[in-house]
Length: 363
Ligand code: PLP
Ligand code: COI
Image (cartoon, rainbow, N blue to C red):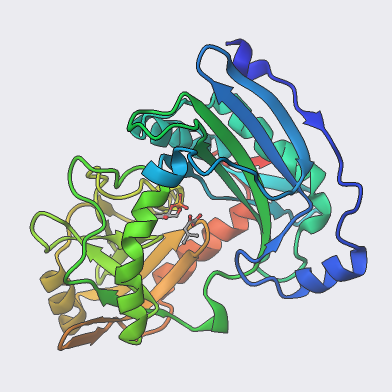
């Protein structure tokens, strides 16, 4: 379509963050607080299609208070990282997988579907404009946040006829601060994340809004993250608020919840399944119950567990807590299989190891 060939206008920032201030920000960015100088916007209107693609200074939005996203939450997003490679170049990791998932999220939310080539080009353009914003710290990267909102000014409940797609970038370090060896999880009893037929497999803001109360409960109970059980039986492990989950058994095999439609099909999850199978490990995408988890942790049949996602990378799970229940996994720290998978992934992402699957797009 003509849409996918849109060219991007570039309006460089006339007054970017001064170098000394930027260096200071990049020395310890944390996660999601330090933003670059530029952003991308592309507009959509029924009858007109995608238009007005541009890279321009990062500015506050002006939107009408009746803008439909503010009322009915027709919003989707993605998260992917640009890495500085070992040889000084820059690269994106599997960006076409994010482009596809973004389109699938749009479809589920009845939104206009951004051509995948435009998604990819928008990410490339922003990294190019903000190439001086890579943090030079261990584990640092440029986290890209493509997102799209329904921008029609109308209070009727229907799919918007106009959309605003944007990409912003954040210089980031580790998602979990404190360098803890492992995270602790709270098993939500009262709240579920997504039900069959709902939006669990889409990356829409509403899923996250619905998870926040359960996440606050996790924090109140001294845990780092909430883990959700399935909505129908309240038994099967689904995923964390923003990460997928894997279990490592004593025979070296891995188990991860299947893509049942209620969890996000993580790109890190998919990559780790491929890497694990490439190492000769068995990976089973099958349901794993909370009672089984507790029993296997107790008997030693379960050796390790970890969470994974773009932001969290691969993070060991040390302890699991629920009302009146607490159990520890393995030595409550990083296990061997977890560490092996983490470094295999990170080494490909950083251009340290060969890229046999063609996952790294050099910019
Ligand atoms: N599950 C949820 C709910 C998430 O928000 C994320 C993060 O994007 C993931 C899983 C992991 O997905 P990915 O590996 O594509 O980042
Ligand atoms: C990501 O990993 O990209 C996410 O969207 C998850 C969120 C916890 C930041």
